[in-house]
Image (cartoon, rainbow, N blue to C red):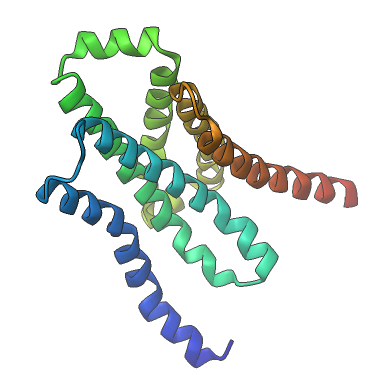
Amino acid sequence: MTPKKNRLLQHIGKPSVFIISLLPLISLFWLAWSDQLGANPVETLTHRTGDWSLRFLLLTLAVTPLRRLTGWNGLQRYRRMLGLFAFFYVGLHFSVYLVFDHFFDGSAILADIAKRPYITAGFAAFLLLIPLAVTSTNGMIKRLGRNWQRLHRLIYGIGILGVLHYLWLVKADIREPLLYAGILAGLLGYRLWRRYNTMKSV
């Protein structure tokens, strides 16, 4: 890639990814505005925001393998943005649950977290994402040093919790959560394979 093309991608890449990442939210606003959320709008909002939360988590995890396989190091600059959008959609997902499902009833939410494994897994994933989002700034990266990378490895566990949340939620057709589970297994398996080869060559 020529330096000119590289500079062009730097200028239009991040704004383009940002706008594309907002499209699911814009779509939800449009469906709500045009009264097309279906017979159960809360369920639709819950499922759509949950789906996009998991998709952005997987996209974030896919950046490093894709960068290594393609040799396109410029992909790395989008990882932080994709991770923050994952947190954004998880926050929306939880907000729908908090506001429309339980109307800010803290005791009902705590009971739900304790009794339903899929809620427990989802809530744990949300809590673990908070420190990752808070420490995503350049300043925090410098302050934490090597500890920043260790902290952000939590995303592997978060991905697993997200898949379990979806898998335990679905009662009949589990093909879609299994697809996400397969993608996650491939992304984590690639990392384990790389680590094994690195240790083997030492």
